[in-house]
Length: 289
Image (cartoon, rainbow, N blue to C red; front, side):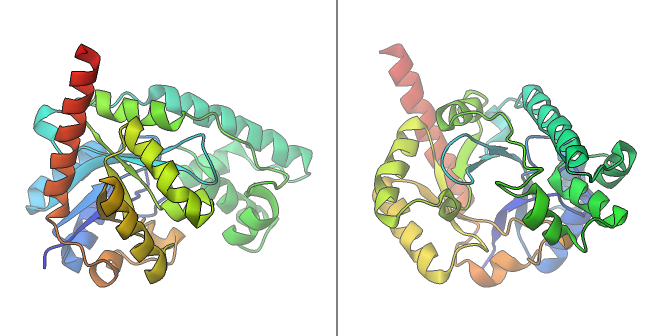
């Protein structure tokens, strides 16, 4: 059965493989396709698509936005119909990220743990700077023994160097995707951290905002949690998707994760296209009314 992974990261955000290496790894693993969903950026997309075409591999443009909602709320945007879509304009999100990063530098300095900007940028490489790069600089400086400790003691939610980033609302995030003809998919919904009984109402609201897909199979979901979300997706009318959320060496999840942990076939891509077309049609009719 051919399978597609709709969620992974490269060195252009917080992954450790370059886009061309991601294509090679996914193709060698036996995946039929892969979506590059770096955080708040499309910088690695051109390289990713080029190597996909060169290897005859289905490479899908994407991104992952952090939204202002409950818990950890991430929205994937997938360019599943590139022939009729437009590039996403994400420059303003980079400003939000830069503001957050400046706050982290100041917070670490106030905590007596200053890190050199040159070292953080070194770890970020060609990609945008994120918290994992601060963590690596902290390890190098000897402040913590590992990246996990950096998050647990300083960079994580509620810790001394945690700085909240300005974010879009769910409705704004979905509209951003749909206005460009991209498909919005809610990533790892368990991370919303709400009671199970609240999910039907919450996801119905997201559906009304334009949500098309729901990431049912993800490393943070137990089999029971995946069954729960699969049932809800069917009831609400969302397309069930899968994603490894692969980060290379930054997380202990292999690029082969979806092959052994998701029963979904590559036909999910067709269902996403159909769902997106239906949502775009609904929005057009609503605006004309």
